[in-house]
Image (cartoon, rainbow, N blue to C red):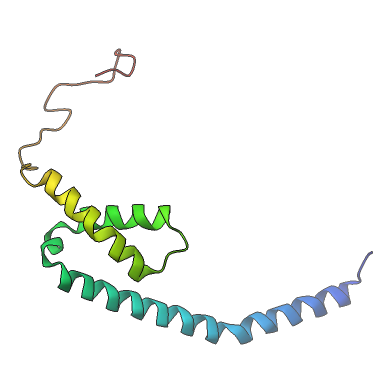
Length: 117
């Protein structure tokens, strides 16, 4: 079934018009979703002030929980992640990351080691 150039152009115009007409609704939903996420995040850090100084660990756990529970709402993700974050922070509490040496400082190399350090 072949369509003429005119029919194709009319179809493209119709689809473009429908997409453009829906954009305000889509953008509005995205803005509302972003505002709700910001509100939940602010409350989360208010409820767990000890997490504020460890935002990299918090982000890591949140991403893991979101990935494992893709259909879960953000408030439930935060609730599920909180005990996991506490556990993660407890595991690294005594570590001094300022004293960690880089691979170069330790003279470790992957060259000629067949991938073994």
